[in-house]
Structures are given as structure tokens and as C-alpha cells.
Image 1 (tube, helix red, strand yellow):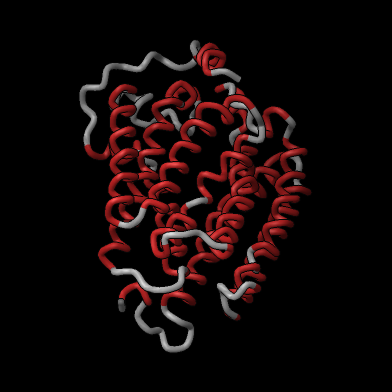
Image 2 (cartoon, helix red, strand yellow):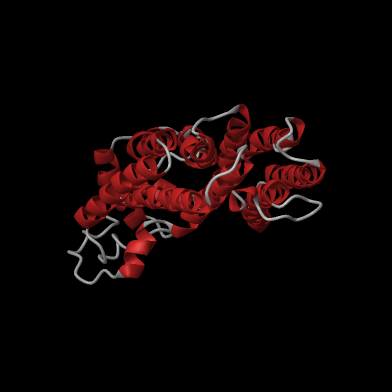
Length: 322
């Protein structure tokens, strides 16, 4: 679906954007999608701590700040391009651009400056491998996902989810100047987690997406097919979550926690698959969506504790003792 088609779809629903005159710091912060930014920084931190060797704490903090700013740039550019869609959806109508707090041109300039600054600073202060990965991630999210996939295919989340899965590799590259199998495994976990996470939300917001002209899977293929795809991805994700322990990145604690978390993910996905109508179906989708956030956080938190502190002595993280 082209952007012009999407614009036509929402023209009667979304008022024209007012000229922004009163945007403040909070509005610009909201433009950066802070909740997504937090998840990006957290998973990048895990990749950084998991990497072999040590890194000066000042450089580690600088790298995480650059990654956070890069994530914020992606969010701002996404909101700039998708302002027409955001205005037509109940969930996003309160964002700064649809509300007229920030103009599209201001959001574009803000996003471009943040993107360029984050990449250049990461390259100059840390290394250019990490900077290149950050630049690739921003470009993929904005150009490939936002400008192309989101409006053209129900597989938008599957392919576009690669952008959100790269941060652990950026963190790893910041510490080592390279990527590795271990960092790629962390990438794969987030990549396979993304579809069931977002499709659970899409089941609840399918009317919003249909009204905005976004071809999300429930809109194009129906709710039942979406539930089937959620279950398939969940069945792949559960064992994949245990792979870090198998390759030596995680330990016994991680293996036990990953097995339990993955099993519960599958149970909730099965519940979502079985409940097809009414309040029970909505409740099952809500439970899966909420748990999916907790799943990823706990999985990476346990890995962070094991690698950063050690499950025995709880020593200071390696990156703090260089």
C-alpha cells in the first residue's frame, strides 16, 4: 500500500495537522518513543556486558547513550512519516504531531539531527563497526519498515522486526569491535519474539489498523490465521530462548528460567489460539501481549545478572573493573 493510498484512506478521518506553536521538551521526548528506547538500551546493555573482554565505563555509558539517541531518532522519523496513520488510530492519535504540538517538518529535522549525531559520536568515541550497525538499524527501521513494509505487506512486523533485534549486536560490537555467533543468537531471540508480541496487540487493535489502511496480519488474513502464526512463532521462540545456555553464553540459572518462561509463553499462545470469540479471546490476547513484554525483560535480565555480576560472588560487572 502506497503512502498516497494511506493518506486517501485517512483523509476523512484525520484532521489536517495544525502548525505547531507550543511543543515542549516532553513532546520531543515523546517523539522519541521512550518505552521502545528503554527496551533498545536494555538489550544493547546485555550485548555489551555479554561481550568478552572489558570496556572502560565512560565509553560503555557513551555507547549506550548513542544507541538510545539513535533509537529516539528512529522513533521521531517514524512518527514524522506515519503522522497520517497515527492521526487515524485511537492508540496513536495523542502523539505530538497529530495533536499539533510538533510540526512534521520539526520532527523530520529533529530525527535527522539525532540520527546523524548518534552515529558519528558512536563512531568517534567507540568504534565504527558499532556505528555502522547503528546507522544500518536506523535506515532499516525508517526506510525499509516505516516507508515500505508497514504499508505494503502483512509481513511488515516479521521483516521489520529485524531493526528492533539488532541492539544486542550493537552493544557487542561496541565492546569488541566485531559481531559473533553469541550476539547473533541474541538477535534471533528478539527477532522471533517480535511477531507474536505485536500480533497479540494487533488482534486487539485490528479495527484501528483497518481504518488507517495498514495491512496488519489480522486485517489481511483474519484473526484465526494470526492466532495460528502467533502459536508457530511461540513454539520456535521457546526453545530458541534456551540457546544462549547451550552455547555457553548463559548458565544453569538462565537455562532454568528460559525453560520456564518459554513454556508459559507457549501456554498463553495456545490459550490465544483456542479462544476465538468475545471477551475470552480479547483477554487471551491481552494476557499474551502483557506477558511477552515481561518474558523478554526477564530473559535478558537473568542473562545480564549472570554475565555482569556472576551467580556466585556477585562481583562488580566486568565493564566496571577495567
